[in-house]
Image (cartoon, rainbow, N blue to C red; front, side, top):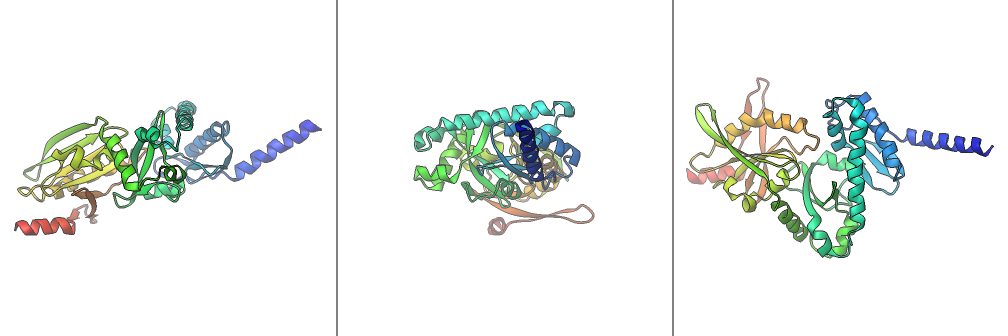
Length: 324
């Protein structure tokens, strides 16, 4: 009788959890993964996480724990899709969460009250607004906006994984946001990145394109170009595209070639969109004018014939007018 009751209890528990699992593909990934493939990932993830944590529900590409914490699946989706042999997905998922669990264990060894012990782990990452919303929003995170349509989050760069700094930990430090972000950016700036400059011929003129590459830090590094890469900032700033966390495209703007950035955008737009769609940690398909440490979104439109038009930001237009 006791065995029958136990089996009944387990059956009811599994049924309750099943009702709380949504297999709807998260927004933006409809063309990346099929419903069957996404269901396979979720069905492998749930028992993996359940070995250590109690799951409340799964929705919009995120696993919500009963403690209120969230495991986002967007990065994992990209990792799985990159492996064509689906029989290996279980191993990919297990390795993914081994790294995350190792990071969480490392975090337990950090004294959140001792900022000196924490600051070496501070880092920064940029996420699209919709991705952050899938985390549960920024109410419990430390965030700022550098690029329109995104959030820059304060992170801990721990062995095995990055994790967002929670508000309750940040409050213990008794420091202002700007000071902590500055320390995190300093840590980012120390990471080696690859910088490449190439010249391309476009419409009879040569345009110089610059690239920053580093799988984990390129985009975060580019937030501070004037300090870590002044050679990539022209007299009138630069135009910057950050399709994903590992790649940045840059065109410097100088008085002698003030409109090269228009051709740069027209030449790279499809490439930027491709690198955005194909990456598991996307940032933006937009272009931004970087000037004196600030980013301003550039309005770019494409008509029915595929012609790309670029509208210069007001501040840049004023600089050009002063030259004339």
